[in-house]
Picture 1 (cartoon, rainbow, N blue to C red):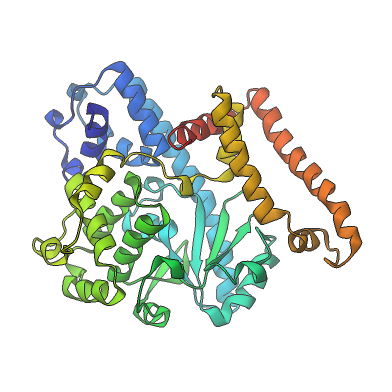
Picture 2 (picture 1 turned 45 degrees about the horizontal axis):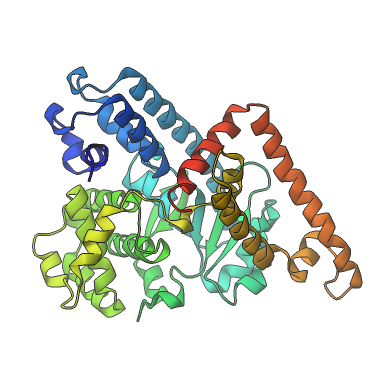
Length: 413
């Protein structure tokens, strides 16, 4: 692991919350530039800023680097304020409809666990409702102007959540009725028990529910292990670290172990907790990992993942980042690869008769449906053209977005 990665880990680790001047390795000007890129690509800039801003000048943190970190920190705070307004509107609407909601992932972690919404950047809002409330919840969210990414009645057959696009600016919303896909092989997990163990909380100023401490820790471990194809990125490990720090002695390690074995997820949870302990110094109970370690566990898998822990997994890259990659000064071969991926997703998700019938209010059996294929492509090109024009005109927000998209995609193409 190079000095830049070591410096980032020093900022993020348990010890980093009490960082001494001599803990940070000496970094050159180019190293500091790479640290900024590394932090941005992995969504941890606010955490790095929090760790570095309290250090004395003797550490050698350049003032311009600290200034850039601070700008991104406050930008993250501003974006999350807008996100929580969006979340509040949805929670109030569902609450008035008598629909219980468990707030998942980032929106729960930022407010409850990190205790500072600027520290946990988010790209969407994840909510869990009971399956019996799914149809009404779907209607209520659509009533706020949200548009399903695909027809939800079709999506329900093969997935575990619906995805909604915001009416104007904002982030997408994922409405879950389960927390794992069946293919992830989480055995004997009863979603009803998850609900029974959930706790009351106030999120975004609205009464809602959150997962129990043990369920939250397991969910974050398994979500990062399965959803991000093992190459988790460092942000998922930071979530694990903060959950353990926040709940502390309240975590029931014996019950956690029983639940892990009952769900049949010993290997994945051991893997994630080991990385959190080894890289960030997470305060997992002393004997817990020893009792959890699978007999057939391959240590090479840990070594391989530690080497790429700062990489950005494909699943985390929004499609617009892949499209924005085409605007950057990148090799033609890589652009062709990204364009092919985007076309496949476009074909599979948005060019079905059902989806066109839905967004243009035309019967899918009608021959007129074929007339809307060029209309849809025109609308899509108009939207992409608008974004491209902003970039070509030097729009700062769009330029920054393109730079971020290029930095992220370069790690995965």
